[in-house]
Length: 237
Figure (cartoon, rainbow, N blue to C red):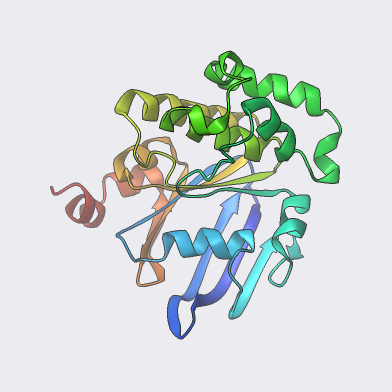
């Protein structure tokens, strides 16, 4: 399947600190692509640059054949890119229902808003039960579900997920990852940055291993799951 997202020779960082160094990777349409690596390898920076929250120093970000390297974040959302950031960052003073409506603010997402909201309640039944509740009163797992649903309300073609299991109980993590698989099966591509390497590789189609802001290894996720390099570095085997 052809690439929906193609990142080429990407360099970025913070101030004088270079984090991403000639980074190259692709995400296929309708597939789950995992980006794994140790702390400080550049995973979150990658998500922020692709989403338009951090500027590109050099290189290209092509989405569906269109160069979005210099496009603002709002234009990327309008094009079909949506980020669920690390830490969820929901608006505590808004209810679940209000948060979902806010997620559909871009023009392309306003059509079918009601039907899409219903789909979010099917994907995450807990949100329907709590739809009148303020986001700040939700549990951490419910906030993560809400953050994912909010992003999906923008009708994205590519969902960027940054550490969705962070701080969640194992049972909640399992539910969230089941939802990620369902999202991909619905036709939305997923680019997943996740601390649980084993779980990421179990659900992903393809994966990249980052080291020092560049790709150190890549391949079909089942193959990387059996890789001696990955097993030694992340599973302690």
